[in-house]
Length: 145
Length: 145
Image 1 (cartoon, rainbow over the protein chains, first blue to last red):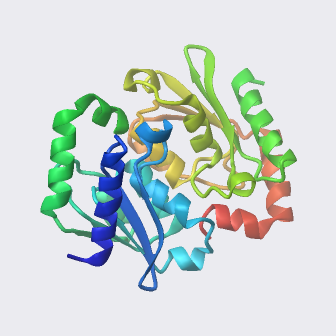
Image 2 (tube, rainbow over the protein chains, first blue to last red; image 1 turned 135 degrees about the horizontal axis):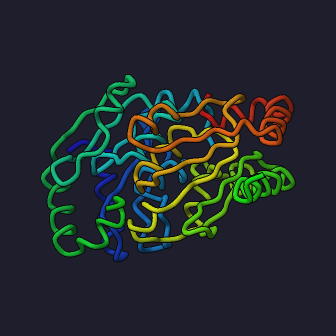
Image 3 (cartoon, rainbow over the protein chains, first blue to last red; image 1 turned 90 degrees about the vertical axis):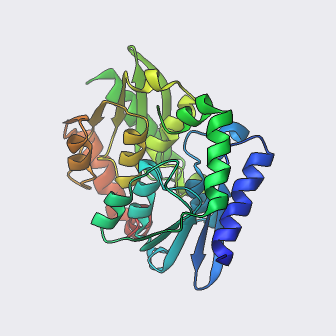
């Protein structure tokens, strides 16, 4: 498997071990991970730190020129908030673990010129399928349902 | 002036006093402020805590039913990230201080059924005009330019 999607899955698994929602993300620039993170709703009570947002936050303040050369890897199709953050910073490429359990704003990303690749990775699908079955209320809270 | 926009402006002014970017926001439910915040880029090095995001974060974890009855007040037209967060949580109404110094994703909000009101408030315009003139580099960083 792609080493960066593997790192995003490791983040998702870390979140699960912490009792959280198993979604992870890494941001890659020039072949190197500059930020990694996972959903923090349970762990810190955050309503904004989805996996992608946590990875962005952990990457720290970067010049626009850096974001414009990054790829964001996420285990799950990005919701409208994470999509908006990708658009704000002009990240040109997003690699998505799966969109079977949740379809995010992939059409919006593509309509703004972002390259979107979906792997339909079995590990990502398993992680979310089990989580949604076990904790439907928590999952719904995370996607505003 | 509307008491809630006044509270959002107080948040923006607090941010300015802290050496930060003067954008503030409050979230109102049932006639009461349930979350208030301001941009934290300078203060905490955050790349995700725009004013609106900080207000959402400070409102804490809320049921979807609460967000769906909220109004978000923000001193400046919301960028794509904050717009995405508003859509994620299904906030139905957004009151904007001004969009003269920055035009956010108001069309996207409206296209998804969100009621958007723009006040073109002189205090909000002054706050941002002076800030952008004094700190153009910091401002560009905040909007990914």
